[in-house]
Image 1 (tube, rainbow, N blue to C red):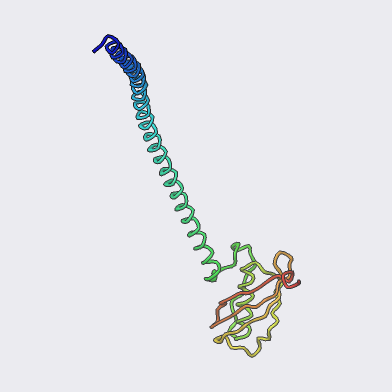
Image 2 (image 1 turned 30 degrees about the horizontal axis):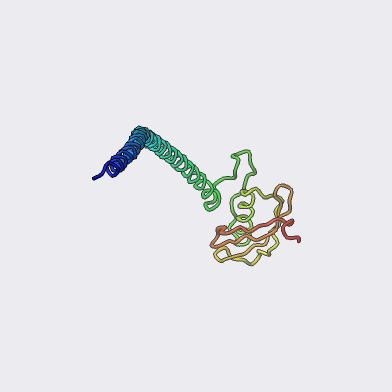
Length: 186
């Protein structure tokens, strides 16, 4: 091997060493950046743990809210049930006395004649529902109390004329279908 070849060989090894050294320096810098990623990873884990605790707290809060709203809905439904029981008593079952106690309009005992009894039933029921100035339009002279009878009536409620029918079956009022005269006009 000649001196020129040796010098070129030595220079090639030296250049290779410098290039390898530069690569190693860059690689160390890169590894230092990766150690920074480890700290970022630790911070992300702690952030994830805090988020998990926060989500659990919010879920608990949401469940508490839902439970409170369900309890409120349950109470409201009980109130509605009580109110509908009162309405059922007022609408389906005929109360024994007029609303408002003894100071209200007194209702006479029902007569025994069929037509007069039906007229008294209709009048009593409409007075209980708050209607006044009652006029029975159907002729009840030959009507029997043990049959279905549809009685046409005119009356007033809150100073508004009302017309309609009252269905009496077996001596009891079964249906009241009244509407104001204002609804009858176009």
